[in-house]
Length: 268
Image (cartoon, rainbow, N blue to C red):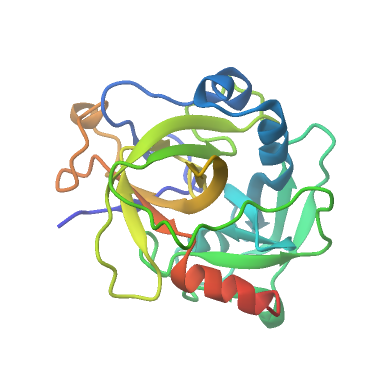
């Protein structure tokens, strides 16, 4: 049975959650790795405008990543970012895109402005997602589309984008971190949401990271990082991808129940 943990960075060192899979850490600045991953300058610019930090400040801080989803005033991220370990809801939450001129935008948390998979969700589970409305839209840049015809499959190549995960302190905080990785397995889901296992590297604050892939030449939004392997263990640092051993990362697919919830929030 795979033991998974939430990848949010609400805990300081030495309690950092990390999982580097298949040798070395493949993550770096989108400005460094983006061209080698096939990202055109306009695609990098688009990512930086629609993707960024999601965080809550009270009563305890929690931070991860989020992305515009379906509408220009909706963000998809990991649900556990919004809840205390006790189950109580956090407040004073915000989104900030990763461009030098981006403002912090408040997240609305009234019942009519959110769709949580669970309240609270079980971290790392199929209900660990949140679609939240922004206090004002982000205009001029469209959310990445969801591919519903060509379903995600084992072997699919991914470009994963994260706002500022632990271990990437050398990257400017206004610049997203990216990595190449691969879908390893797509289990059959018994819930409303779909999920898949990857060999993507993850550490604290990786939650909500955006999984992109190319379908017929266009970038599509495949999923978000939800959980990764066990507490830091030297024997697992760089270990081969192994679900039973915990050397694996899990993403929730942006299709199925998540897409339906986002369309409902947008009134579509």
